[in-house]
Image (cartoon, rainbow, N blue to C red; front, side):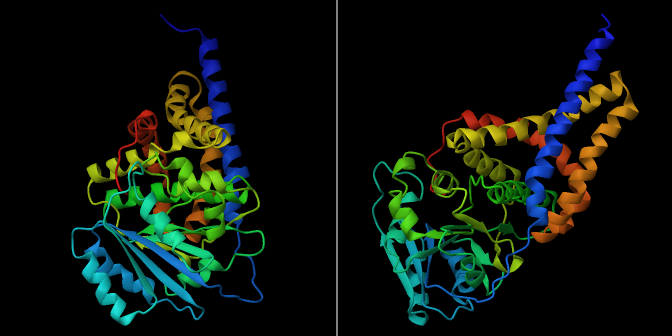
Length: 374
């Protein structure tokens, strides 16, 4: 049975609507990151900082990356709180060696598992509550600051209104397809959470590079409302406490942190499944905005194929071209700002890949979170 022409016209209209929604997201949201310039700071004021790192069986990573955290060019009072959460490897002895040279390391040894609190929320809470200073700066044991100015850059936006600073947690660049896909997915997520924050709708941050005031943590009773959820110590917490006025971003490459991406597809898929299980707990407005963007992005290529085959190929490509050009310009500028410009030549491949990406990972939204530490 040959479908009537009206059906193909409707498909084309739906395709145009999907493209229009996508272009709206790029021009209204994502262009904010592309156009963003770090505010000029006439007088640099360094605040006392407590850097908090949680570690479980991270002896090897601490040996490699902790020096990059400790050797920061930061003149003002600061401390490094390393929470050793029930490690059974050499973590304790590694920290003992570092403490001989760095007197501002405060090592907290946890020897019992917290009941009814899964993930790393309990050790992280212990670190934050033990902090001497109001400004908290978080990263992971497998991360290293990109430069010695990480601490300085991440605390610069604080003022009377700002209570939360979102940073970029990048991955080391390596010559593999998996590396490029992981880094693009990381960029794509950052494009969203940075742009939403600039639009006054902050919804998440990443624990690899995140800062907030200790008072925010205490005022909101820490992670008490999300203790039953294995992950979410970064994105869900920010989702709950961030407001239109209390969030700033730092995208300066000198303030990035770097970590090694997963080495196999299986490891990465497992990691992404774990992350996506927390998104269902976001606020309704965030779920709507993120869901609409993802849904329309998912529909683009099936609808484009249908319109090219059954309707008008040149008109379909012309409509698609509007988004393609808009996306290309914004991606180029944003990738350059986040030091990911080597990914730009492949952005169309990544855009098509996202169709399959959603097929793989959308089911994770309805899965029960696994009780993993990280």
